[in-house]
Image 1 (tube, rainbow, N blue to C red):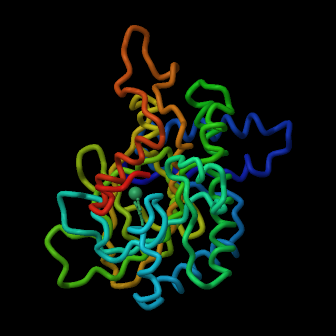
Image 2: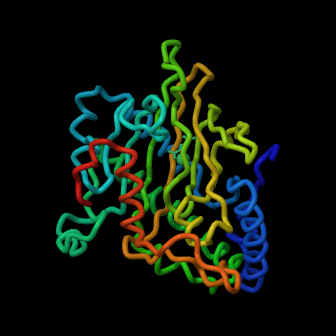
Length: 324
Ligand SMILES: O=C(O)CCC(=O)C(=O)O
Ligand SMILES: [Fe+2]
């Protein structure tokens, strides 16, 4: 693996109705090959407007530049629903290593406080927390919607590649636990601990991640032989990777590849991840098309919520006592 594949969605996004199925099949074939191989690929031609992307990065930088007193009240530690601010060293993606040199802000599916799903106490259903600037909320929710739509389109291609009906994932991703996560990595400090990184080695927990970065490199993808491939930044486009939920769903046919971040370039680095986790009640169980005759599934079925809870509880010490 010397470079990651690039999948251009523009022929699909702009296809006339009669050309759509062929365009979708071409994307399905490309994703299928990437998902069985490196587990990572770039996505271009996604159709999200540049000015929305610029606004997301601009507001994100403004948010992280706020004084600590303005960010602390939004702490994720006050939210059992995986929303809010994570300070520098607030997370260990690799639990065997020192804490991560990054700060983050998580935004989930936006629900009103009286939403029946919250009132019924459904897992991961809660309200978002917001900084004061009203434009921040508007910008982030517009981007959440746009990235979610790209993710659902990719899942149509994934379903076709896996030999399932094109809309198989649609009702498993229509009220998702998806998280839009803004990230800020300060330049790697000279005094960092041995083994300390911007983001420790990890795999992602959901179905797919749609990551956008600025022009500062730092993302590294693990090759099968354990060496690391530096993924060059492609601002305005996505780096997409398969997460652990989709690996389970496909019985390991698709690969969830470990990756990490080292911001060694001496500049501030900003990235924006959209983690497309399924609906809380989605049944994450081996697809019939991924099971060879006579063999058994590698993983027992699990609900989307139980799986995400298990993974988040292992990442954050503060969660040891919370129920979602
Ligand atoms: O910031 C990046 O480039 C990657 C972040 C990442 O892997 C994650 O948040 O899961
Ligand atoms: Fe990741």
